[in-house]
Image (cartoon, rainbow, N blue to C red; front, side, top):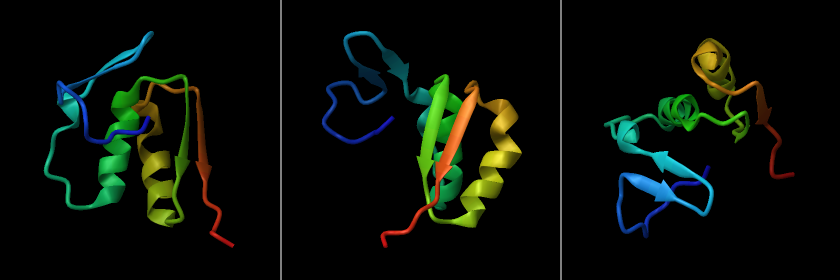
Length: 81
């Protein structure tokens, strides 16, 4: 899931076969790591791939995995090299 600007209705993202309610995504998280976990919890996807190079993200994903609806969670932690 990629969330960016340019939507007519900021709380809903729609495609031909999927509608996501983003009203729960509002928050005042200053730390991007915790905001990422919030998105994973509310994504309701069967599988997710998280791209992050921070070990904090790995620990947060492990701690909150049971709250996510996904069966497969992959963290790609490679470097640019």
